[in-house]
Figure 1 (cartoon, rainbow, N blue to C red):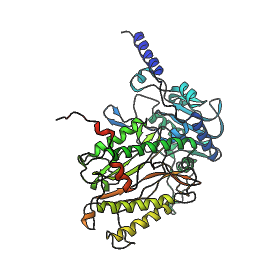
Figure 2: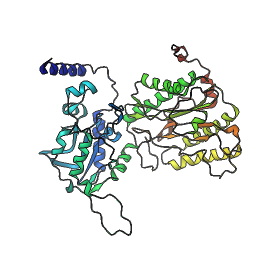
Figure 3: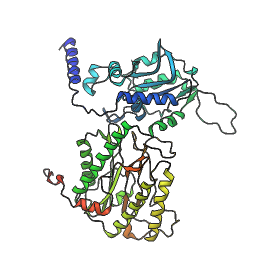
Figure 4: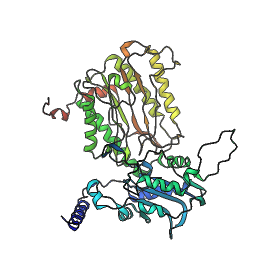
Length: 485
């Protein structure tokens, strides 16, 4: 086969691939949303400043296999671009750059028929311009020719580098090279970002700011727009349905991995692209490990099963936890601990209102739990320090499961979790009848001017309601597979 035939074949393949991109979801965020977010950031930036964002790196899984690519949330928030090897520049005011007057530039990976045959179609310069609404789009290889005197800015805002990006060696416009070129342009290696001690007398003079952008982006992202709330609500509801279907399907002979699989199948059934974080399914004592992700226990028996999972829908992730008895019925000790956590969560949700804060939400639930643990004889006094409730009660959710936040007062259209828990590992300094009990209940709460609204509330939280739902027949009971040796 000669070169001409090979090229024709590749181009034909790409054309067919392009034409095949039909029946796609229609509820993605619009290019106008991302444009408005860039404008909101621009208005919050200091005068005579530039903000620089890099796409996420491609991460290698093993040998020649990479992990499924996931875009940097800030980059996606501002662009809608879901490909690697890209850089975005946003100027506080219009600048003349390479004979173009603009307030933003984006450099993206170029179209490559051969590469696209293996890894999928790229938008390229034309696609980014047409689909994402950018007027000044360039191939990544052109970034080295960007003619900007970064020293002329009062502030060059970016997130500092972690030095964990691979050099592909074959792509002169990969993320590694884009970062290296940027470092040269801003004289990065000559700068020092350490805060001097009182004893130091050397004054640091630099226009590089690797901290300010975090605050600016957190201020934008912690309050959701109406478009974001639509996607976040759907992610939460998908996750809640997953919890409900597992409640109906649960039985003592299930494995942790099977429970995980049911949840994640339901996510895919609804069109959620990913899980928002590694799925946590902890039976019995495994639930006492806060971020237990092995999910390898083969039989749940009569244990409580702590299930902390969240669907990611079009970039936005839920975070929903339910704890249920594998046999369908809480025993006495399990029920006492469960109801204590439930009461703490109810109190925390009531405090999830405009003007409240994480400290208030945490304190009301923690007080209930401490009094309850004392009454049950698990701790010796209400004020005793212990590790049975070792984590905070709330965090923001959004494009990250622990979304950016300045952790100030709650505002309308913030979405946070309320997730108290009690964990009593085997060997704890209490009566062993409590050992191996782990309970967390977590929901995604929208802050509104009329009070809290539970996005994941369709999944039962009350112990009696959980037991009632677990009595229902599951459609999954008819799903059987051949036995394998």
